[in-house]
Length: 154
Image 1: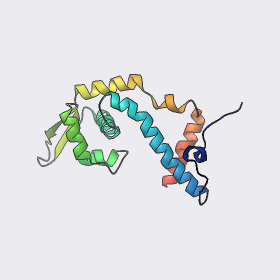
Image 2: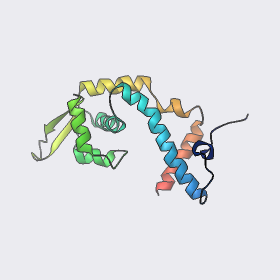
Image 3: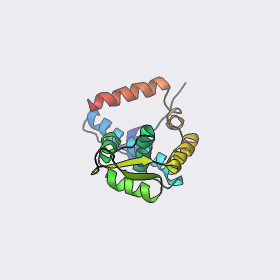
Image 4: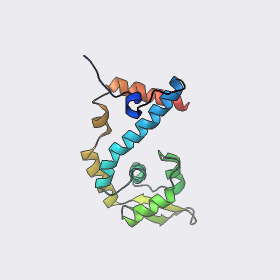
């Protein structure tokens, strides 16, 4: 069986890498952008961003317990995101609600609402990461790739 795929050299039309470490770093960065663009189609359909989706998923995992902004920041995939601003947008879209923390009145709790849960449920039915990956990676390949990425981050 012959497996064909686009090599990073072909994708960026360059072979000018300092070494394999440089090539791997470019490939990881390129692939992250490629995946992000692929996912964007699904997020756009529901008028949310990847970061908003990430926060909704975190809140669903916490449900029915609320989350603080600090908890969201800790658990977000994109650590550079402004969680407060993203939550404000989700409140405007009526997907989450903000309430005062019972233990610390200075703290604010964020909770996903029924509309937010419904959107995630619809998205779960339409989209699975497996669908994009299984065409080019076996489940064992995906496990090895995940382990290697964990190892990279040390």
